[in-house]
Amino acid sequence: MKTALLIALMMMVPLQTNWNVYEAIEQERFIEEEGLVKVRLSCYLPTGNKTADGTEPYEGIISCNVEHLGQDCVMYNKDFLPVARFQCRDIGGNKLLKKGEAIDVFRTDMSRAKEFIKEYGPYVYVKWIPRDFEGRINVPGYAECLPVDTD
Image (cartoon, rainbow, N blue to C red):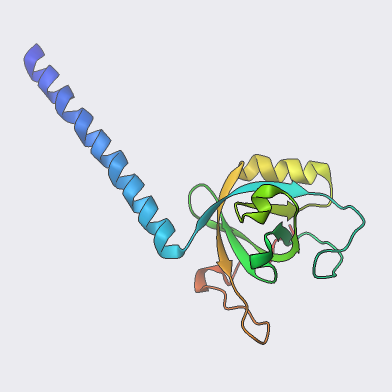
């Protein structure tokens, strides 16, 4: 009886490990197929200055690297669900922002910034969406219902 139980337990361990490996492979494939990029998430507050493209800051914009200025991005939570859409209207001086490894979400006050980071954590995935020559954006179908974040 003890031997049978021991064999059964030994057989279950590899199955659980294989399941975790399978899940990780599926996540990697989803990230690659969707063109997602893992970035550091931070927030910035009003300074009295305009954004890099000359607008007054408002909730719904992010600061990122120069390459993505003028684009939109869809932000995904840790479960890979799209949760918000932002417009990149500002650039930042932070080293991670300049390298494209972070986004800085504008919030109107510190409590909103803390809530945002607490809800989504220090890292998120984003999908960059370029604009066409007329300034229109081709938002993926699943993200069309996501308004630009202003909660």
